[in-house]
Length: 205
Ligand SMILES: [Zn+2]
Image (tube, rainbow, N blue to C red):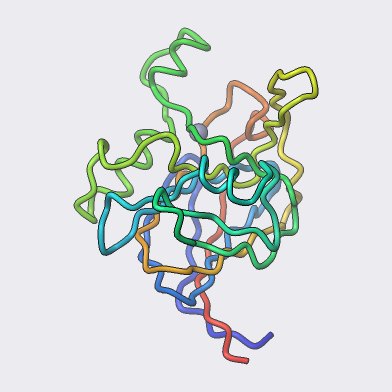
């Protein structure tokens, strides 16, 4: 498939980025070194009250294992992204991201780098405040947190290998924030946060 790249950016370990994605453009999130989670939150550019919804995405696809062929929906049940390629096939779509409060509760540590702060900083230049997004907006790309048959949740190291990626085709104009998850106290990022790469392109074939 021929394509034209509009943007190419490295997100260093523990850092964040934001971008505007237009309808028809494809966002590629690549795990450069493997076992690294990208927390992605998206809001409509037209109305920031319309945002990605993990709950609706799981419900409307009839599965929590969202991969190629599935659609990510907004909280108004409108398509926001189509997953058009996925080299890993395991992500967490239950919502949520690490935060100062969660890190203190889990690990009794304070002043940690975390996704909640990263996402808030990423959105700042777009005039989007912390209260404009919530846990349900977050799609945890490459995160290996799975629902077990007995009802428990099991957190393991991501299955992503160096160079693995997911492609999200935009179905509406949106503002996107991505936190390169800084968590190093559990297997979420293989105990070793590493860089991610993003690309935006449009198919020209
Ligand atoms: Zn995180």
